[in-house]
Image 1 (cartoon, rainbow, N blue to C red):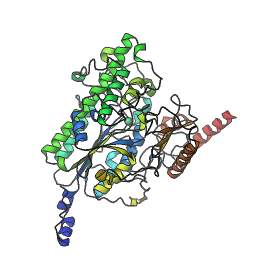
Image 2: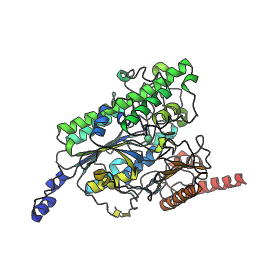
Image 3: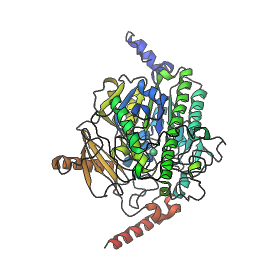
Length: 578
Ligand SMILES: [Ca+2]
């Protein structure tokens, strides 16, 4: 594909572009795969010991962009992918239901993709694409905000942030019930098939949509897995696939991955081992029983990723058999780092769950990876999901297919989640209008990296073009080799910023804010400019969910009742502070 006919006459060319069939043949299909809570070095092309041969093949035939950034949480990262716009503008300034009272229903903080957004599928659809989605949405459960209402022609979706991976639909916790909902196109699914397993079913649906397509128009497929988000669960036959693989503990796996990454050219040969945050017990401090439990967490997590890889392989095989693989642009990305939380974070009532060692990973268990392994999965980077440490916001990114001329590893350029949509629009020759359904759209804040895919050298976010990241008051600003970082407790003090040189110290071990005060202040002013440009609202007044109560909160309206409640709470908070 891709021959535009260099020897053709102008008339022939014109005939070609006005003929829709031939025009469509020049537009690639797009398969956009998102992995949920993925550690940076889990996958084999990134140094992982987990078996991911299909993803390896994608990397072997494509390009890894080593410095790819998102946000530290699911919904704001997905908002970046689906809009090309900073999450403080698109409606996910804070992940719902975590908005503060002063952020509630303010522009950019609605908790769903707002009317200033024309989504990626809405835009591609205008350019003749079929648009399919299966998997996790997390960008609005309200009427008018669901995938089938935001551009997807066919969709099987989970609207929330996470749930059981089996057919026994249970929410992560009480606050999650409202969007613990599956939709089959526009119909709510009350009962999942008995043998439902998330990754397998999502792949099945994507395969169904691709194979049921009758015409030759290109498609956009958004395959948003919920693996390996907790609860860590696998079908019985997968339970012991990694038995014993993690018995040597945290530092052993860190070492293995470091060695692999050095061989792959992903890190410098002399980069020291990241000692970890020090927040968790060392392997040799654990009891024999605790070692078994810890090893089991990672065994289940690895098996979940291998299953997902297998399911990706099935989708690729179907594309190949249909003769569509060669003309399909494939992107694989993680939405944020691995998850350090334990199930109590969700306020889950643990009683109905059986989390005994023998039962871990089964449908009636609720097991999470937790912090010690989560930071190992980020090797060699620091921290994990929820934080703006590199382990939270630097994610695996692979792109392969038509238009990706450069192969191997791009180790110099930085890209951000918002850059993907403008890139895909440029590759497919799609123009996003300035208004959509009578709403004036916000400008996309992302920048196309299409040129970078062709020559490696076209920096998108260089030493002049910094970018900010913020999620629940965890903050970062990056420019060139430099980064400032602000972490909330328990991992930071919630008061101060640190400065790192990522080129020399990618593991963020040496705070240089005192050594380089001028650079530090330059980066802080970059952060201030960023917050003003996107309309960031600092968190104040406690959680709106607590102030308003679930019923008022989920009305998703700043009406007179909610205004009065928020006003009173803010006043009380101010009085309390006096
Ligand atoms: Ca996630």
